[in-house]
Length: 413
Image (cartoon, rainbow, N blue to C red):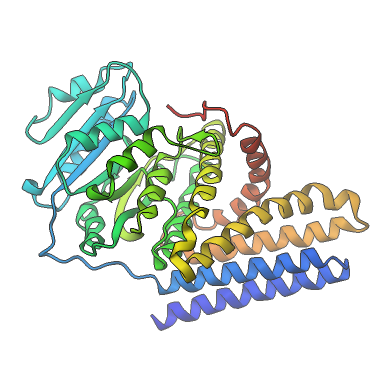
């Protein structure tokens, strides 16, 4: 523990050093806005690292074993993958009489679920098949309605569970204040190519660092739909109606249904936590086209749901400060990235030097994240390169997402 604290302190010290280097260059350019940006980003990163260092998992209480319903929405998934997912759910270390599996086929064009029904025990797995495609949120809601568990576990159709994942993700619900819990996702196909290697380390940092920080204030903004759990009693008729048909800023939930249900549950006063030892293996995009479509979908969802969360997050009083501060810096960061990378070299004298320094700082930040992940991931060194690449492409992704925000075709079912 002492070593970990010293490691975090070293990371924070290096970040401060990078910020001071940026400040020196910024003041040389006589730009107070860039000076304030450096201070802001350093502060937010410091808070994130501090909170993530304090994060601890909720221990399992063997006397707390509520009934669990594992809800799986399926769409055109190959039979072999479905069999692997179901088998992993069946093999989880949780009492069989307190665990049920529910599959909802969202109007698939293939016959995988029909074939699967011939291979499984109907007493262990419930199957519902839609006549036509209705969408992920409707499939999941149907799964909720036909299930009976006190705790609802959402699982993607290409995500496999590890042995202790269910009992670990259920543990935090012993506290009646907890309404949602996000599991920890590992990248199953990490070795496929460079893009999947990038994502392996990216996922680790996104969950262990950022969700870990959010969990410390009980406000995990997105309990990942690939593997998360929710308290049934928190999904009231009003929540159901808002989730399925509600609009915010004229936008309905057509993607990012996981972030939306998390927000709706938190709005009722429940906490949303992260459980790092509740582990599942998921498949990530392995082509640039798939990855970009995913990021556009996630960015649109982030925009909509962040503004929605902002309308009630203040109820958490001092705990909401981190959310509002990090959200503000997130938006500012897009503008700063655009300026430093795409404008600064061309409109400011010697601007190319400022851009070069900024690129170096991004690379160093990627190196810090890589060090954080080195004992937990296979391709941890790839995080150095990915920090710079994703920073550059995130700007056009954000701009495109804003311009097409009202387009219902978000690259998902």
